[in-house]
Image (tube, rainbow, N blue to C red; front, side, top):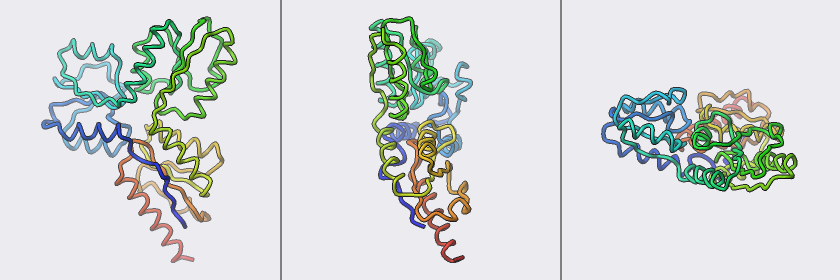
Length: 286
C-alpha cells in the first residue's frame, strides 16, 4: 500500500506561535487558559500536565481564579477583553493575527452601516468572539439558511477556517436572495486553511482513501474530512495512530494523509508510521 502525504498539512504558524508563547511562561500554575488553546486533545493534555489551568469553552463566562489569563489562538471579543481587564486580570494574548484580521474586517463592515453576515460555524469560539462585538449580524452555516434581509447594506465575511467552495456557495445565495442590497464581501479565510484545502484537492486525485489527522473539535480538520466525503472518497478522521483500523485499507492500494492546522508534526509522523506498518503486515499476510 502506497502512502502519500499532502504537500501542505499540519500545524499552521498561528498555532506554532501560540505554543512558543506558552513555552516562555515560567509559572504555568499561575495562568488560566481562557478556553482551549487549540482544538487538539494531545496539546491540551500536555499543557495540563505542565500545570496550566484551563477554563472550558462552555464556561468562559466565569472569571478565571488566577490573576493572569491566556487568550487562545481563536481570540476573544473586545467586550470580553474589557470584562477581564476590569476584573484586574493580566492578559497573555496568543490570538492568531489572521483571526485578529477577521475581527477588524467585521468591525469595518459594521462601521459602514452594514448588517454583517458571518459565514461560519454557529457557536464556534472564533465566531463567538467576532459576533459579540456586532450590533446587527447573522451567522450562516449553509446556503439554505440565507434569507432576504430588510437591510439595504450587507457585509459578508468568514470564519478563518471556512472552505472556499462553501463560502462561495453561501455568497451566491446571499446575492440571489438580496438583489436590492449593496453587498460587500471581505475574504477573511486564512491562507494556511486555503493551502491545506488546495493540497487536499490535489491529493484526492491520487488515492483511494484518505486519513485526516486532527482533534475532534477542530473545525478545519472536520472540513477536510467533509470535502473527501463530498467527493465520495472514503475518509477517516483520527486523533492518533491508535485510532487506525487495518480493515479500512484491505483493498486500498494508495492512501492519502492530511492533517488539520492544529496537529503536531510528531502525531502526523506517528500516524504515517502506523500506516506503513499496516502496509507491511498486509504484504506478509498475502
